[in-house]
Length: 233
Image (cartoon, rainbow, N blue to C red; front, side, top):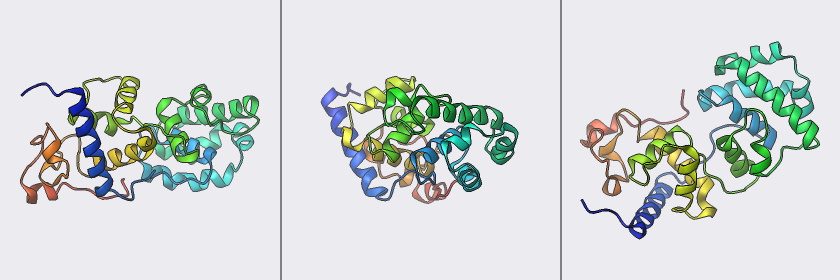
């Protein structure tokens, strides 16, 4: 099979993005939040945890700690009990309280709206920062989570494994204005159809453009049984 040119790759990637847009017109962040602070806390909690589980915990958390100052002054043992079911609860508690103290001390109690500032906060890496920027501040960002990484490699867009390199590479394929919603589309596709172990290739709308077609069942009836719908547990 001949090597794909850069132009051909860009065209294929953008066509795949258009198909994903048609397939998932309602794609959005599946974490429940009302403010940048709430989204930041929810995203920290979502590490190694489903959005569904986080959304079960955050109403209690948000009610108990309505302001960043409340988080900064929180009793760690009380917070740990609330978020225990999300896993790694001690580390997450330390991150949330540390983040809140940093926001209070450095940013006058307001979650910063710039990547360079967000990534200096405890528990906040580029992925978390881009989630907050894209969904709470309207600043385009690519959320390179495990679904995102798996799919762009499976699509043959890149062989990179480093999330930052993947972010920059894919950022050159997809128009910047669509980065945030593209991330949602890709994550939705990864959760619903393009699974890690058995992708539902036989019903995938991207099948004709995907070099990995056949990694999962190609029979439409078999593939249809693999399709999942949210919310995800």
